[in-house]
Length: 456
Ligand code: ARG
Image (cartoon, rainbow, N blue to C red; front, side, top):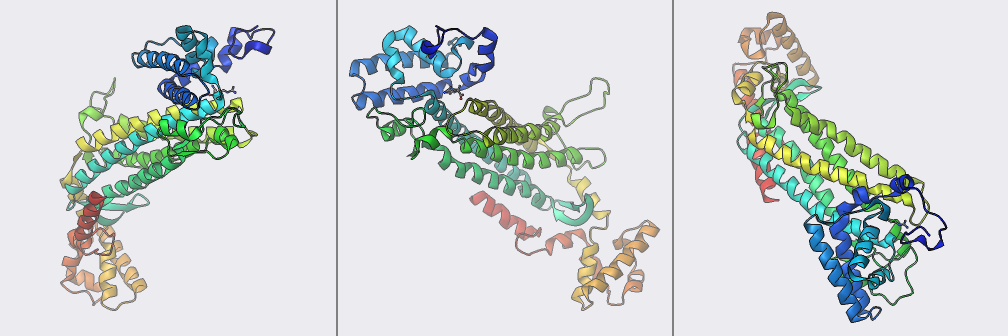
């Protein structure tokens, strides 16, 4: 006899350290609320279907409700010897209400039970994640609205490329997050399915009503195949994948924030409340939060790869390998919730140094495309216009000046198509303003973009 819930056929017990290795209670206790909710729905259904008597149902439900109160007050004491959240709660229930508690597991297995817990848990948490994404998007829109006419250098290859509206740059992250939000939202329909009643894998001989327990738990659907119900972890992979991609986006944004807050860029200042100092260098103000978010993207990729690898070789139906689906999921959830909250605060409180950005854009060659376009508009083939402009840029580099510093005569050395109106065209403000193409950086387009973003 092993003293376990499943101990009948065993002649001896595993040693404590072996139990310890197999136990999941250290982490699956985070499913305590969902496990109790699932059990209440299951026992209610058993009563409705006449499988358990009304007084048995009442006793079991009463016990579960007491456990729920204790769980809410953090008063439950979980034990490794009881392996996981399901067996811990079942033991607590029978201690509380007596042997009738053992009837709760009628027509159910831990396999459909654990899958139900995971579906319930993620369904709630994904909604919270979606709300946090929305809050960050709102904050990005606010910063963007303050910076529609703030000119900034736009980069390719991290080299100054063309002047842009700083709002346009910021809004890029809004759209990335919009897609993240859509992905999380769309994933809900694959989370919102009840596996409860699938049993170990084959269904059950008891006349259960799976649709009723699903309804009691607020699920919109039930799995149509009992083996699929207990073997499916796609919805967790999808969550990890959506989280990982969102972290890739936040990591790119974090990298820009880190760059922009250097002395070399100085495009923004992070608020003191989202920065840290150095224990040795008194002058330091470090963008630790942004760096951590950039760094934490790594663990979310790891969690995704971890679960994909766990799943790839396991035969149907349940295998204990699947217990490994949990820690990565909790970790990714914890990481993305933290990252979204921090990011929102960091972006809301940062100061955009408009004057630095203004200067930056007036002291570079990011208006060179304007000159090439100007010549092309006057009939010169664009390739030739590119060459002429390149040569003028080279002249400027040699003299340590910028295009706007060239005299008209100097410009005309390049091409006599150039006239005095070129100076208006070369002004960075004009370069931005004239980019009216749909989705371009022109101020009017950016305003339209912001209106659309706010209407979503
Ligand atoms: N702790 C287990 C898990 O997380 C619960 C399911 C156990 N089922 C079983 N047949 N051993 O996957």
